[in-house]
Length: 264
Length: 284
Image (cartoon, rainbow over all chains, first blue to last red; front, side, top):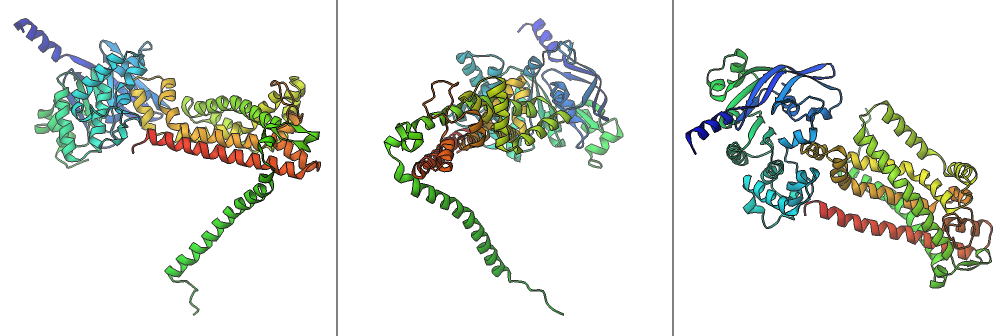
């Protein structure tokens, strides 16, 4: 790689992939997010922490517009992804969700075969080429370190897998679509500590290629895996910055109270 | 002071167990009793001839072939119409609207429809299909009437089945960029299929056994129906006329036996198919 290329890739690596400006979300009368501003850097892990009901999951679900599915939701502000506001009328919602994938709290494979689970997204996006699907399947199962375990039983029902395998499979299901951002909503809360550690390792591998935003209740987890951390409280983004800085010298008193365990 | 009468826990357990056992036995015995009476009187009538020959002399002689054909025909048309209508309504109510006034009204309407006596459906079918739309006494009129009669059952069972599909499946499907329709057809309906099929089976049973609604709309012609515009007599109507007009009690019992066996067979076969289907879609 030439010097120039290296510099370019550095710049690209530090690009903001998502910029959130003055974002407010209302559920009927209740304001769940208050004027949130945040820059998400590409190919980094951003952790969102805060007590239950503080709006961090709402924030996450706003980014791929999953909140649209909830009755009476209203959104104000901008979320700029790839130079475009995702709330624009002409946003292709299906394409947005392909590019910004989501992993949920509980492992939730469909009651289908492993093959059908991983290729589900491709098929709903109109892919019929079996060879391409198989190629993507191999890649995404390799990316989550499941290929060697599962390659001989791709037709088995995904519900037969262990919790950790199921969660990896759910990540593979997202990766098969070639997303740029992966949203993770407490992806380890249903797993035991060893499985959690292995999923964290996986996140570390994945950030080579993907931008990860993770909501977690577990502050050690945020400190371990993330590059940036945001602290939410009552719908407000209290503090956002480099993870090291947030955990060693928080600027806001409320953040300090939370991370030192005095509150929350 | 008098102490309250109270059994020891172990004794109480025994009494309750015996009592519940007794209640269950009564329920089962009623079923067994019906089956025994029908089969004891009906089975001796059954023969290949009875099943394959058309009735002669108003049903006094011959078999019941034309009524079997009419029953199948009518039930088929009823379900052909009611299944898409009912499942479609259920999908609309659960997946395409939020809970509100409209859904409550639709649901209330369906409940009311379920409570209407079948003879009223017969009258409605007679007025609308037989006279107004000029379908005459025909398989078509009868089938459509039955379709409306079983519609609430299909709506309700499909709705319950669709509601019991885990919400997570829908969320995941949407988050992977599926449309609503893709989510319904690829995730929701396959998971809800056993419940929906159960509703359809129940409706088949009701259609086969229905008499009042059919006699008004499909008529009671004994000939083998040649098209959906032919008037025809179903097995249950045949049974009713044979017994009511005292034409032949033995032929009536024979018809009843065929009806009961058919319904039992349908239930057994579906049960078997469903358990196979469920074992295919869930972990070992």
